[in-house]
Image 1: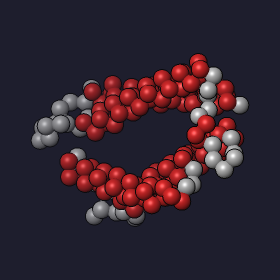
Image 2 (image 1 turned 135 degrees about the vertical axis):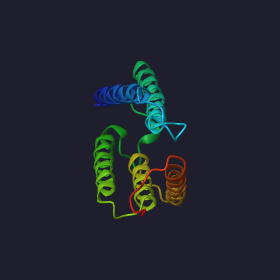
Image 3 (image 1 turned 90 degrees about the vertical axis):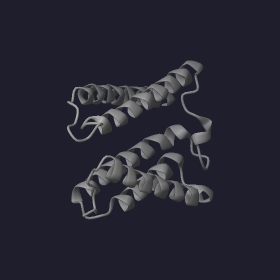
Length: 165
């Protein structure tokens, strides 16, 4: 089971890396902006670059753990439940949460900060496991990330976000 999860993690990360490289390549082909010095490709370039970097880190970590024979990290098991049994449920919940986040964006009736705070908090809880001691810290970090992204995206990139009229 551990080997299967490591292989799935490797393949999913590799697929995400390929998609990120494709987006990065396509965004670099966009022409420069007339009034915006960064141009229309700036946001996709930045996001794609960060994703490529993170994917390389995950691929390196997965490869190193697989070679050492430790494909599941012991610190990820909680309450006596092995990480190998918990991981598929975490990934399924995270995928469902991601779809809900995208649908919430499409509805355009809930404010960006509220949607993103809920998403980041629930994703952190889902991937890390529920720990009452760190719930408040996770909520504060989620709110901070959401507010920072809101102001960066609306003021720096001039992007219209959900719930902002």
